[in-house]
Length: 151
Image 1 (cartoon, rainbow, N blue to C red):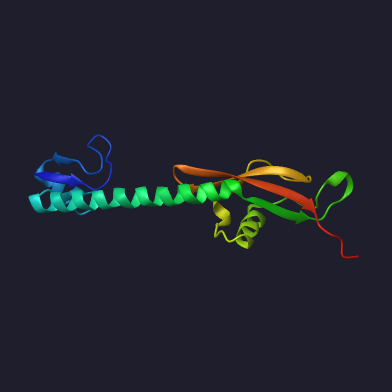
Image 2 (image 1 turned 120 degrees about the vertical axis):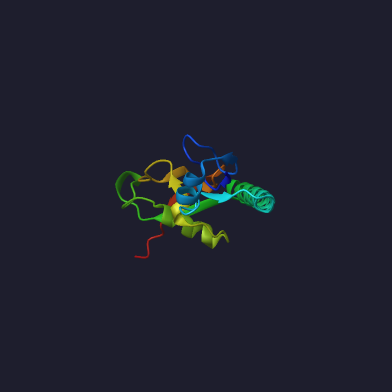
């Protein structure tokens, strides 16, 4: 029996391959578990078309991520923080604060994709990494400045 693998299966093959398996293994395990589909000429053509569309979609997402990366690397986020002795800030600067700073500038970035390269506990300039896509990461400049006292 010939089947199309829908996922990578160790010792059998990788996603998209058309392989021959024993009838019982295909009908009783691979197909019911959603790991494979019967390989008829129609299903092979449909699966190939589906894979082409996914590849196009992934390429478009990567291009969009590259455009956002170029914009982010030119941006600077200024974060105001209360300062104590020796320019040490109270607490640390978090990815959420960086995401809010980007939101003010018009970027919709989720705080979960922002990574601080180091703990920010002192005033100064730092770098944050933003993972936009599996293959695209942007480096963002973060400036921590003292907050104006209202007293």
